[in-house]
Amino acid sequence: MTKKFSAQNLIIGALMVVSGLATSCKKSAVSPDGGTATTPATPGTRAELTRDSIYLYAQQTYFWNVGMPSYATFNPRQYATNDAVLAAIKALPSTGGKDKYSFIDDGTVASQLGGVSGDFGFSIFFNSANDLRIKYVYPSSPASAQGLKRGYQITKVNGNTNINTSDASINAIVDAVFGTNPTVSLTVVKPDGSSQDVIITRGSYNINPVLYTNTFTAGTKKVGYIVFNSFTTNSTSLLDAAFTKFASDGISELIVDLRYNGGGSVATSEAFTNLVAPVAQNGKVMYTTYWTKTMQDKQATILTNQKFYQTGADGVKRLFSFFDYDYAPTATAGNQEVFTKRGSVNNLSRVYFIVTASTASASELLINNLKPVMDVKLIGRKTYGKPVGFFSIRIDKNDLYIPQFQTKNQLNQGDYFDGMAVDKDIADDVTKDFGDPAEKLLAQALNYSVSGSFTSFLKDNTLSSTSALSRTQTEDLTGKMDHEFKGMVETRKLKLNK
Image (cartoon, rainbow, N blue to C red):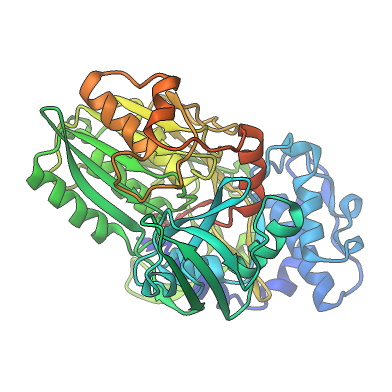
């Protein structure tokens, strides 16, 4: 008997926790290093119990829980906020400084993972120090309804023309576009030089992460191109439709543009993998999930507080918990996936991935799955580096996301914490719309398809206007302006161990 671990189930199941917060804080546990995790001797306030729970869940399910201090030593109640508790956990020596992933969320991530958002529907980045551009727009979003497109230059934000890369300017721009304001006004300049004033009102819309598809003729080859921006749980049918068209076009190579894709559903990444992988791999190992050893050894008893109802093998609906899942890294436990070809795009000779420092998690899982089984080329900049994933833990009114597993491909490769290196190192080109053959990263893939090599640096500069931003500036701005979710959320069907 299995349970689909979807975003909805994560939230709904967690909301059904019976006194989960208070119960979790009353449990005693043995920490992985053998020290007793002494819990508070006196009752606490709601806020204190929440901070206790953040620590106690980490102590039993956190990917770097080996060597964590006892509850008494750590003392989560000494911190003023939930975020401060989590920051202290991320800073523990046991993490080796690797945790750039954990966060606390109000439910927004679960909604977006399910394919629904409530923002303006676009994102931005600088082409040069005074040149702000739209880097993507979601179809059906409020920004799309106003006619905005990738590559448009933004010359005014909420009446302010002082647009540059100073901290003050960036803070104002980020607050206007990614904050909580109900509207944002922009003046944009289009590629033809015309100007347009728009007012965008925040609204709910269904996310379509397929931003663009096309089939190019590169010499004698047909090359498919797909821009995929998020691994939402509702996007598999959209991918199927795109690949059905690719099959009818007779493509022999594929370009997958993941330059802003921070990840999402593991199950969707797996489906994408099967659309690309050669049919000869059917039945062979795709990847293995390695959960925290405490969870593998059935010692993460605190997960008994994350409850859900499900019909058992006997046909009776009863209460289960996340503790009842089997976390062993085996096929029997459901934690070793095999290739199962999807669709009719067969025998691709090569797949190119367009990536940047914003490419993370489920995107990297897709790439890592395919590297051992076909010719894979990476174009752009080194990826974010997130080989670990999580499911949400409901604590009071929030969702706690802390890494609980790592994935490794059939060659047992998966330690790309520092990101995946590229075959062609070249900066993103936000001056061109997706699908423009002159856009620098796409141009590199098409050139390789024809000639079998990437262009020289000198020729790169003739393909499009060169960004005035240095690599260091680009990396700094990415950290300040990148608001895409980065995560690999477990959405497969996990097996119950009873």
